[in-house]
Length: 137
Image 1 (cartoon, rainbow, N blue to C red):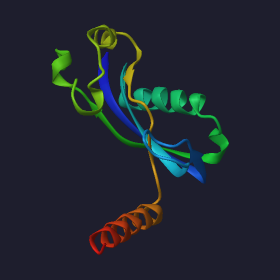
Image 2: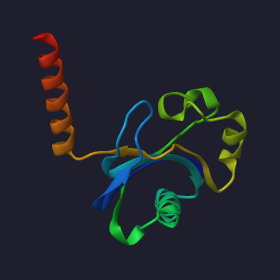
Image 3: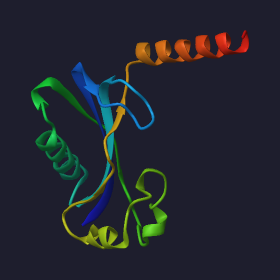
């Protein structure tokens, strides 16, 4: 049994309206998301299939998405939770970590939505224009 870190990217065929973020008003458009997984399987291919099947099975509109495994890595010599419980995996508990010797997904992050590059640039320009008009008052 081997433990793997699997990074998935899901791109939407059509942008999705997302609820306002904390402290903000109005919806925003996501064009996809990233999600990160730790799982155990017998091979890299089986781990990739396990995670992709999970993501597709939990996606609201899988027929309107493109699924991609961005990265998969064998976590060789993984012995303690502290070796990986940081960054995106800060919520990894000891109980979750103990399941690493069973076949299956034992940890995954929440979906991390993203906007298109054009939306990001537009947003940055809006912020700069707001800051410039603030400076001139």
